[in-house]
Image (cartoon, rainbow, N blue to C red; front, side, top):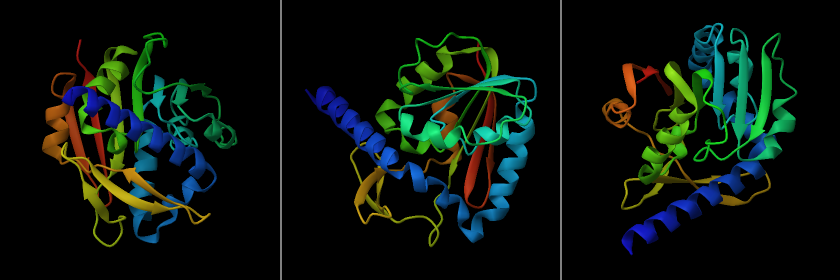
Length: 228
């Protein structure tokens, strides 16, 4: 019974998150305008602009394509997925140069219909929204679409007092939540986890070789190779 309740709670959190980001689509990129974060954001953009040179990339939870545009500077192709089709209209307005970019509506936990033909994978600002009890399921789904030894890069937020939205509560699984307000005045409780470097390494151990964790002031980046 506890497992059933836990699964139902996680699924409800996922639905709440999807609804929130669908409503937030038009104002999402305001988060990248915080003055104190500009140096870190430039560094991430520079790193992603060269990280996937010549690769066929699967991007999960692409949102408005903000990071897709930087990956496209060197990647050969990108299939960018998101559960909310509302974001694709904004994403398609980005400049992708000669990179072949295709947008695909897909649940991050169910990528089985995507052919395992990708030499690289990426997700940005997605890990922090995965309930702790569903991380293993996501990793199984994500890695099933990647070829052996595929390069994987992921980036997300670090928690910084005074810059990050305060944590409003923590549940029994260790998930943390924030209360956020949209421009229309509506308030939403959003799951937002802030893992440590050791937690990331532990979670990835069964899936990853050559794990590198880079901690910036406001963000973190993980790079690794998928195990065979």
